[in-house]
Image (cartoon, rainbow, N blue to C red; front, side, top):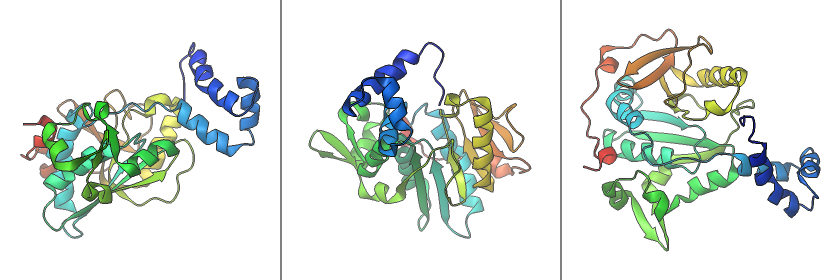
Length: 270
């Protein structure tokens, strides 16, 4: 993960409390300790990871999911009636559960779906498994209709329904290291995370994602991210202001090119 020049103070501010808790005199001594203490390394990952997220973040990608990607996968996977999705760098799980809500509303009867939510932070994955969110977090992009349908009040928090929890499973994964054994995914959401890596690591991550996505699958990056000038494993399709990335060599069908007319109440709150 890259921090811009001049942000050294931010790293030190986040590590100093951990250093003191570990009995180190300063951050330099703590860095030495990290070379052999893997438990402390996990704490550092939690401290330095940027966990910025919200429900249906930026909206347009989820509209493209329901209008373009999901109808194409329903047509292409009619023989198995199952869709596999990866929510990479999932943070506290709002992206994964946003997708689960849309799948619950738009998958035909008899279909199943599995969303793998991965993150480098064990603390964040524990939050995804718990599926509990504060009122402040609930207010960040979640329509009232979805709140009523998919959540119940638990003390001062809101807990996602068991049906959505069953659709989402978690797994620790560091994008910058070799991937563990993964299934083949139909759709990969890897949004707003490549910006934190240097150019060579971006290429490597995109290469590894290409190895675990189906030949007709979809990959969605953040609005400021692209595969241009990085490597040649990906083609691009523009759908409004959203760029969809697909494995190079795949020829889209008319069903993919023409948006479907699906109900998007969950995103609009209408």
